[in-house]
Image 1 (cartoon, rainbow, N blue to C red):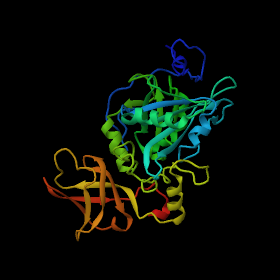
Image 2: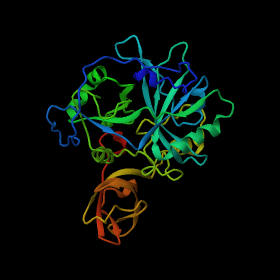
Image 3: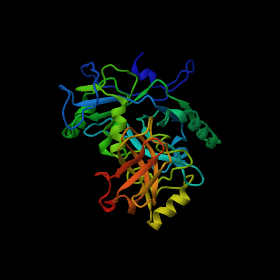
Length: 358
């Protein structure tokens, strides 16, 4: 089945086209399996590492009222499609945002994709979310749809990929990546930070995706993400628990303080205008004997004198995220576990954060 046919968004037998995507022709290249290139060294001739994100899923929202409908629920403006660089045609654009509850706490973190449309197509957006809350997100959208002319449906035909350069100097070849990738439906920069590379939505699985690319180990993607301090999914952002500004939503281009009203806006706007955010999610490095399995979410992080500095949120091996008081991160920190005693914890401030936070 042609890629464009997969993207029509109409149920079988209903006919009609909701939207389509024009593909560019390019040489097909088969990817070899490898781990993510670390330390700036290329694996063979590979320039890019592609990670299939099986724990991410897509929801399609389409219809004449899709834009105002989503604006009333999301923390950010919508990524409306616009002219591609140097081209007369349009390109998909991405954005980052959270859905909040009425108390202003995060429910779902999403990457949004605004899709090109023409005069006879309906406005369409794809919402990338944690696959474990796919059904919950759909119910949340339907609950608030009321009489809006909007269709909410899953989009299982597309798979989500992260594409990272194997070496920092390869990031400058990003434009070439967009021009050369074949059989892609959407290929766009990760809207959260340039350190997270590109996002690719495709019908393909493990075939020719990106010229000069290799398939990567998913654990390497998560290690990279934790080292950069980028939370993603329900483990890093527990629904109804995480606060968006403490989760660095503003740093990741995920909130607009000038847009119209949305659910949960009041507390978020008040916190922003007060200008005081005492705790943040920081990337952390663990050292010492780690417990079997992993450190439990919510485990207290302590200072040398035993004072509370925050709580461990989530991680993989010796890297992770912790919600810490900003004034405590420079001193020695530790976690006390029942199995291994003390585990030293070192917090850092990512280089891509605003200078004023360092």
